[in-house]
Length: 157
Image (cartoon, rainbow, N blue to C red; front, side):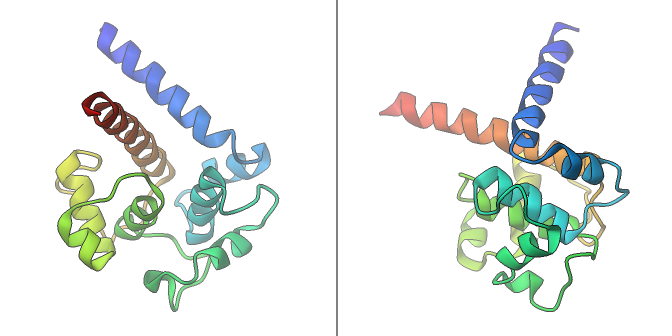
């Protein structure tokens, strides 16, 4: 019981930390969506990493990431797939990913890496649109994993 309370508290703090970089109106709009669009995903990741300003639109945020191969013929309003979101997160996180991901930088291997790390379910399908809850769950887990790995690296020095 205590473990669940602590985990819930940690997840709340991480999600709050991620959301403080974005304006309240945009975050509320994102939360009220059924699925996360590519523009919204780019906005969330971009503002969290400092690549995108808070006052930019989803289209402008999407244009900041338009150099990614997976967004070549896409629009900002399309729902982002789980594999694409995994790739977007991994390219902007402190984690390097697995060997094949480092070689190819493709959504398939980003999702595969997240499955191996337990960040997404083993039976998750990469071609499905991602829900808002799934997106925040991934962001929270990757933040916790990166902080934990960083602490381990610092202890070894």
